[in-house]
Amino acid sequence: MEDKVLRKLFLGFIQIHILHHAKEEPIYGAWMVQELQEHGYTMSSGTLYPILHSMEKDGLVTKYEKVTDGKIRKYYSATTKGIKVLEEARVKAKELIKEIND
Image 1 (cartoon, rainbow, N blue to C red):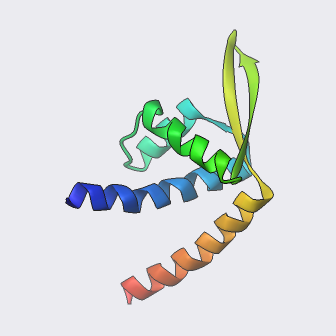
Image 2: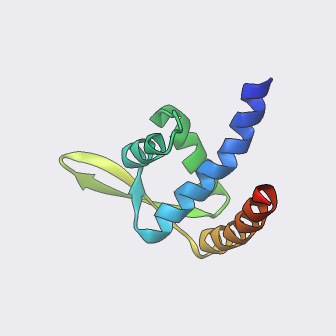
């Protein structure tokens, strides 16, 4: 039960993290998995790609493909909507952090 609740909670954190990096520059799955692991999230590309697809479907990121080292790599960038959602999430996160730290 606890794991399920934490997974749901962390999904939001992961999406914010993805939007943060996708706003800065285009990201790709393997890099994002490694980045998330550096922040303590254990995740495979098989878990990450459905999240990216869902975010794409919701209009938060856009995808394009590019051949890199002979492989087709999918890159994701934050859309205008995704950037707006990120900014709103930052405000709410700051409010929450202030509240739970007081």
